[in-house]
Image (cartoon, rainbow, N blue to C red; front, side, top):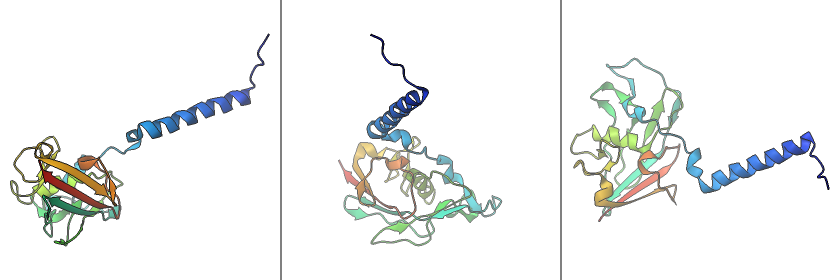
Length: 188
């Protein structure tokens, strides 16, 4: 008994169905495939200043950040990322104007093009404010909240929420406008 052959249209529909099922399987079982790669060089960007030509701003948005260590909020100083070494009289592409002691601090992200700005890039900038005294990242881009050169993953249990939802991207989380990012470090 011979099987009926499929028409070209039936073949195309079958292929489309298989590809659609494959796409949804990847989306459900490996969603990280769709995460954007962080642009780490954003921490070296400078708007204006003595050392850099003015590159202009294409993107300008404001995520909010709160960092808590053992129940105490760590203040982010006003003007973090402004007039730093390597960016004299200018502003890093991620910077802070005003700080908040009781809530979230607004980060200003101003880049010359659309970039995937990771949370860790702000820690690289923050660490330049007072090297050895400001929260920063280790050389392998792990949180170093107490600037002792040891990855905080060895010293603390770390959790993070973005807009109230748990998030495990941590240093590599690509920030978006109006995000409320809360990092909590609890000593082990």
